[in-house]
Image 1 (cartoon, helix red, strand yellow):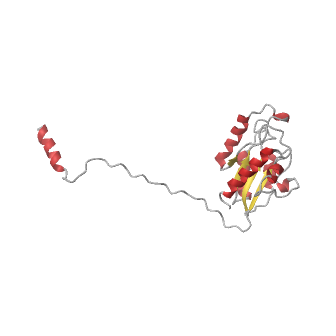
Image 2 (cartoon, helix red, strand yellow):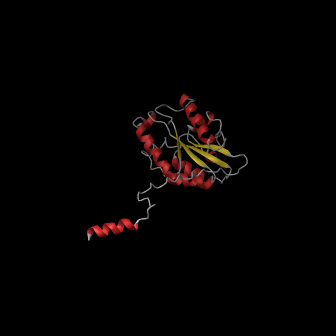
Length: 201
C-alpha cells in the first residue's frame, strides 16, 4: 500500500515541474530622498551659549540672528537649555530658516547640574522654524565647574538628542577652555558646512 501511495504522488507532478524552491528575489527598497522646500533666500542659523560666536565665525554657511547677545538673538554667554526654551517661546516663527544649529548644554553640565528639557527645546525649534533641519554642536568640558565631566558623559547627553531628529556634529568642542577662536572650531565649522551642503548646495 505504501508503494502505491508513493507512485500516485510521483505521477501527480507534471513532467516539466521544477520541484526545487527558488530563492525569493531581493526587492531593493526605494530610498526616500528628502526634498528641500522651495524657499527664496533660505537661512542657516546658530543659537545657544557663549561658544556660539566661535562656531559661527568658522562656518561659511551659518550665522547668528544678531551679533548682539540676548533672547531675541537666541544666544548669550552662560545660558542653559531652560533659557533657550524661554527665548524660543517669545520668538516669532520664521519659515525661511532651513537649518538650525544648536550650541547648548555645557552650562548645565550636560544634564548633571540641571534637568534639561531637551524634548521641549526641540519641539519649540520645530514650531518656530517649521522648515528647519536641526544640528547640535557638542560642548566643552574639563574647565571651571566642568572639571569632573568626562567625554563619555558629553556624548551620552547628546546621543539622547537623536531620538528627536537632531543630527550630531562631530567633533565635540572638547576638553578645553572654549572661549576664544580655538582650532577645533574650524573643524566643527567645516563639518557643519559639509552637512548643510548635502541638501543646500
